[in-house]
Length: 434
Image (spheres, rainbow, N blue to C red):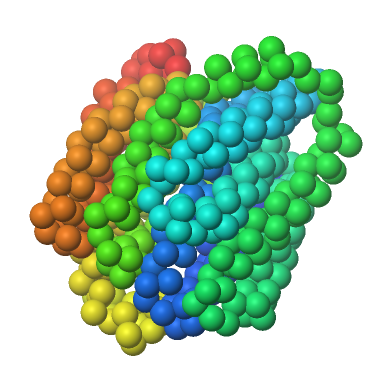
């Protein structure tokens, strides 16, 4: 394959979008990380571990409401950027679909309340966590990301603003261990209010009367992404909830805090990958340019993530002391053990969403996530039961390692041009398989 230099029109728009995603990144991950040292000191180990435990619930609820929109929805919007009527239909029915999902999640949460670990002990925390998850799920990011027209900047500004308010209110209102539930309440109210305001603004431009039938059809079209995501939640948040029934609160706090730091480091690349994904999807008619972008992204990811993982291992004592304080220094080994997840998770984020999904191979990605769940969750629960915290940290390592092997094999089979030069004939053949 003869790879020629590529140039994008609207490079300023793309740079602005990357910066906007950087703002969203700061709002959703790094600003909340600033509150961790404060909560760790104010709430003490047991109460802090419980709040970290309940912070898993918004991730699960938000995931259900996101359904397959963060990949399938973005791909659909990016592929029809010039069709205003189609954009209005997808947005309106997607909004209705999320409303139906929210009702289902709230109802199911009430049914599961008696059996969720620690829910009866902390009922307010449980339901505020559900509310925070609904707020997370109604985020209109998927639609604005697919548009790629610069409107993502407005979301970034509001997201940064709401996270800053959340941070300040936490410092002002959370002072005792029993105040931990207030943090979950503030999270639900600050984020929920901002996202509802943004949704109202989008509806003024892109709203058409939706139908339940069309909303259900949209959910069916993106179901593969959701089922793959369910498997991801099983070896992620759900497995962590289950580990909460095996490990003491103090150990759960160590594990979840270290896991959060690792994922925050990996997410540094999110602004770039979130910007490139819809652009790659929009290049469905220009295979050479798409392959070139994917090659550059994969190479940069391999180099940077390997360096980041090694750096995290070496600097783990400093990172843990800054993040949680001197009293948590004994958990340094947990963070060092999870450093290997940095390159694995980073490469999986490129091989799957950035390469397989634009080529129409999302089924393989979903299969990889299912296999990872079937292998890692029973293994981690067994090891945690027998070896405590040392066994629990195997969960993300086994899961991400399994996904990596499967998606890498599929990428080599589907897109051999990613790793080596191909003839024009091979390039055209790969393009025809999409």
